Length: 141
Image (cartoon, rainbow, N blue to C red):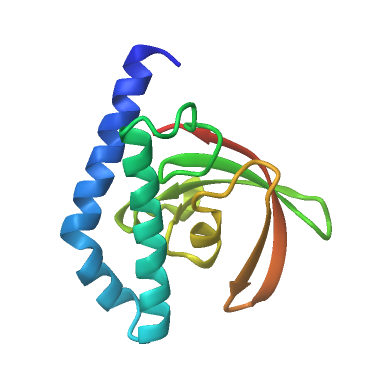
């Protein structure tokens, strides 16, 4: 990884931490009137922030493309029909369906967050449950 990419990646992670520190409570309150889902999502955000801290503190090395970060582009494969789809996991205000940008709060996005290449992802969505395989993840912020 080039020093400029490494520095840009670290800066993105720091921006994400600042975003969560400032926006998480209000974001969760608006997105989840149901306290159970709100608490589960708060725990997921906390886990993600812990992972960021571990990376920034040097406890994790070489993780930019090993797991899904906010800012990662992913290729998933449907378990049933084998079709591939590509998405980018983003913050809620960066959603763009035409570009395949999905929020980390969406049913798929939340399950992808911190997943690793080869993981089987089970998703419970409003239209039903399904499973996909995480085929590729590349951080492209």
